[in-house]
Structures are given as structure tokens and as C-alpha cells.
Image (cartoon, rainbow, N blue to C red):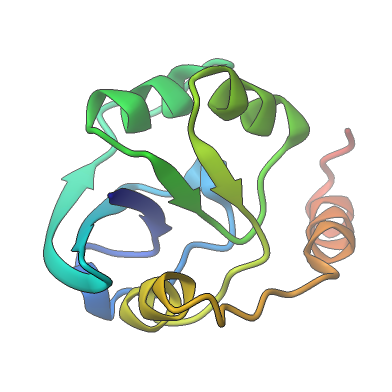
Length: 128
């Protein structure tokens, strides 16, 4: 299984999950076999700006089967679903810890991530 996680920087498994899926400059693709992390790859997002569906296609092109993120818009979730990629939202912390918790089915997520992101967007002057 290959898990894609948007990251705040390029430190791989030591990176934190990005709070903004659509603003992440890096993705960490984590290869999991037999319930263990076997390998990972850090990939810089190849575009400065993106349109609807660009990031889901980027994840698919890199073999992502699951995407674990903190916040994500409904359109992106729909694109991932159309591509057959499982979406997990509300995840936070170090990528290694998040992926290991997901593998062992003990991942704790923030159930209030949508409200927090909406409040942040309002503070920044964005409205959706």
C-alpha cells in the first residue's frame, strides 16, 4: 500500500502533516508492506498554483492509494473518491507517527478540523 501525506517541509517521515492539503509544497509517499513502513519518497509539488483535480491526479500518478491529511475540501475528496483513493482527514502530527497509527488502526483525528480551517480562512479574508 502507498500512502500519500501532505507535508510542511521535505524532512520525510519526520515532517509534520500540513494543515492545508492544497497549500502543501511537498508530499511524502510512504510504502507499507505487512503492516510496516518499508520505504518513503518525498516529492515536491510540481506546480505553484493548481486547479480542481490537479493534486488528486498528482497523488494518483505517484501511486497513492490512500491520502492522509488534516484539512481538505469536499471537491478534492470527491476527486480522490473518483480515482479510487481512500481519504482520511483530521490527521495531525509527525508523518511517521500518523502513518504507523493508521496502519495499526489507532489513528486519532481531530473531529473539528473543518471548523478550525473555516475560522482560519475567515481570519485570512477567504470566504467559501
